[in-house]
Length: 343
Image 1 (cartoon, rainbow, N blue to C red):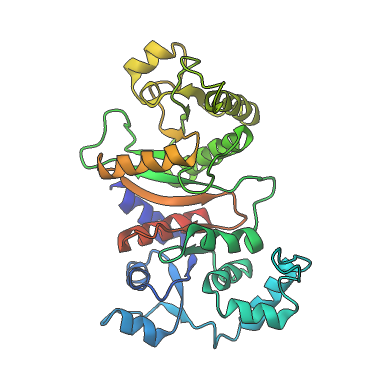
Image 2 (cartoon, rainbow, N blue to C red):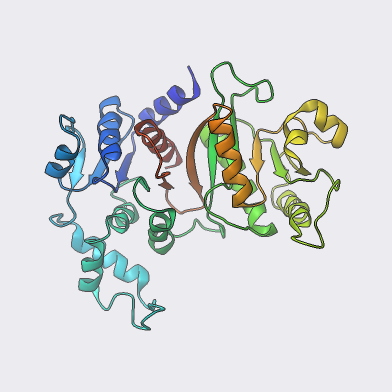
């Protein structure tokens, strides 16, 4: 069984309920139908059922719970949740409270289905949340940060991609899957944040990918071979991040800083970082910033034929994931499966 089939089978066994916030997007409507038909998860789809059916003529939404927030009997409950979660918060532009009262909160959520979906999750009426097919990452994650918030003890919300090897595999990644983090959320993370990202991505490798992580902290330098201390200090940052991560998770197989070839190719790893148990054998890669990460995963996907699943969000108190706006139906289905396994 290949990784994607295995992922969907595990999600099916989990029996979770996932809210999809974008019933106005045809891909999301199609995905909702597929997910329920295959039994991957139970689905709450936000929107008007008649509009969803017009958007995708012939779509079978039997089994999909389509919820129109404007007529939903739970709207008052969710408005109360939002008001309490944001009570005391002030609008930076106006200086006024974000929500003057519960009625104001209700008016807001009936215009913002992404927030509505987050409140369904907050209330425990769903096990996970997926959005972002037609909304920006900021619009998708803001409700998560405002009402779901981070898990206890976690300071950094981050993301990773599950990178599935093309047919025929890859000689450097015998498991057939690698993890890339953070390619979507943290633009220029500091050393402390990078350490958190590394530890969170390693946990995703274990829990979702089912592999034992070997984490490489990436750079244009391997063990001091290069330095930009006079300019951007990116190499010292990765050195420090490696040190912090090792202190926080001493049992984790993690090392760096490595160039990518030193991290993945045994012959290069042995040459550039002799004695490292990670060099040349990494399967979990932590990029120094979003520029490197985003470029790296898209090169792997477009030129290398790797399938990118994600971004998988890490650090929230409850599972909440953001889709790429260029996603297709299969990618939405896979993201829902991942979300179900995070729950």
